Length: 633
Image 1 (tube, rainbow, N blue to C red):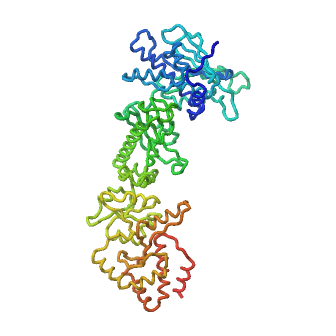
Image 2 (cartoon, rainbow, N blue to C red; image 1 turned 180 degrees about the vertical axis):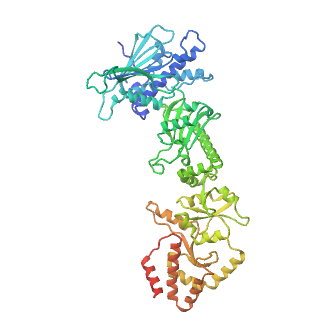
C-alpha cells in the first residue's frame, strides 16, 4: 500500500500543530465533535433543497465509543461524509478546510453556523493518538474510503466498507508516560466531563453507551454471591443541545437561572441578580451574566481569576475570557456567545480583537445600567451587593487615573453623618445647603472614631453633611474623581477646609499674627513633626487638632506607609492647630511670657494629644508619660 505525503511541509507543520498550537490536549475532543457537527450541518442544509436526503433533523447524531482493551476512542457522525477527492483535499492537505469553503459559500444564508475554519482541528487528535483511522462515505456515493495516518510520515487511502453515510474516526491512543496519562480519555466520566465543558451546546445529540452494574432481579442485595450483579448498557445523551441563553428571557424562570448558575459556576447560593440579553449590531452576541450574592472567599486576593466564559456558536472557546470584563466588574460571572468572533488557528484566542472590544463595551454598559436600576428600585438589595463588592467599584474609580468615573461615580456609596446611612454622591449633593461650597469627608478606622474627630464636630456643627471614609482606597478614589457635579471634595482635616465667616477669618488671622513668636517657639519644640503651629477658630470644644497641607493627607500617609513596597516612608505636611477660644490658648500665652521651657513641654503634650484624637499612634509614649507626670507633681 503506497504511503502518500502531506501536500505541505508536513513534518514541520504537523509537529507545530501537535506540540505548539493547542494549550490543552483535551481540546482534541472538542475539535472532532465540532467537525462532526459541521458535517451534519452540511447534509441538513442540503436536505432543505434536495428531496433525496431523507433524514430529518431529529435523525442526526454524533456517537462516541471507547474500547479499553484496544485503547481506542471512536467519534462517528451521520453527516455528509467525504468523497475520495474531499478526503484527499481536507485531510491530505494540512490547513485546508472544507468547513471554511462551505461557510463562504453559504455566508449569506440563514441557519448555517459552521464552526471549523482552518482545517487543523482534526490534527489536534495526534496530541493523544499515535494512529488515526478515518472511514467515510459521502452522501450519494456507494463507495467508502479509509484514510489512515501515524503522523508526520504521511498517510494512506484505500477503498473500504461502510453501510451508512457519514464519517467514523478511530483514535489509537498513545501509551501512558510518566508525565502524560492518555488512558484517562478512555474513562466514561472524563469523556462526559469534556463534552459537558466544551460541547454541551452542539445542536445535535452526542450519544454514548454507558455500562453500569445492576442487581439481578429476585436476588437478595445482602447476599454474598459473586454474580448477584449484571452489566446493563444504556445509551445516554451527553449534551443538553439547547443553550439556556438562546431562549428569550421571558421563557426562563428564576429557578432555571439559579440552577444553571449553581451548576455552571459552583456556587451554593442563587445569584443576587441575573442579566440576560441579546445584542445585535456591530457585534451580535447573547450574554447571560450573574452577580453573586456573596464574594468568593478568594475574591480580594491575587489568586482570583476574572473572566466570562466565551462561546462561539455554542462551542466553548475560553473558560475565563478576562478581556470581556473590566476589573471593577470582575465579580460578574457568566458567559457570552457570538458567531462573529475571528478565531485564531487553535480556536483558543482571537486573531483580531475588535469584535471582542465591542462585546466587552456592551457588557460593561449593561452591567452598569442594571446596577443603577437595582440601586434605584431595590436599595436594600443593592446595599447587600455593596457590602460584598463595593470595594472593587471604589478601586475602579481610582484605577487608570480616574478614566472610569463616568461609569462608576453614581454607583458608589459612602457612610454619611446624616443618620450614619449609606448615601450616593448624588444624594449628598441634593441635600447640600445653599451656602455649602464643597463635599466634605473625613477618614478613619471606623465611623465612630471619625465622628469623634474635632474637625467633624466643627463641620457638622455648621449643619454640613460629612462622608465617613473607612476603607484605605476611599480617599484615593475621591482624589482621582476630583469633583462631582462641579463640587470639589474637601477633607475636613485639610487646610483647605473653609467653613468660617469672613469675620471669623479676620479674627483668627489677627490672633496668629499677634502670637507669631510664641507659635514659632512651639514649632521649634516639635521639630520636624509638624510644618507649623497656628490658632484656629474652626473647632468647637476640642483644644487641638492636626490638619494637613498639600495633596497628601494624614490618612493617605498612613495607607501608603503600610504598603510593603520597600520604598522610603512618605510624610504628610502636618499642622498643629490650637482652638483660639479654648482656655488652653490663654495658658500657652502665659507660659510664653513666664516659662518657655514648660511651653515647649506643653507643645509636645498637645501634639501627642492631637495624634491620639486623630486615631494615630504617638512616637514616644515614655516621653509623654514623663511630661504628664511633671505637670501633675
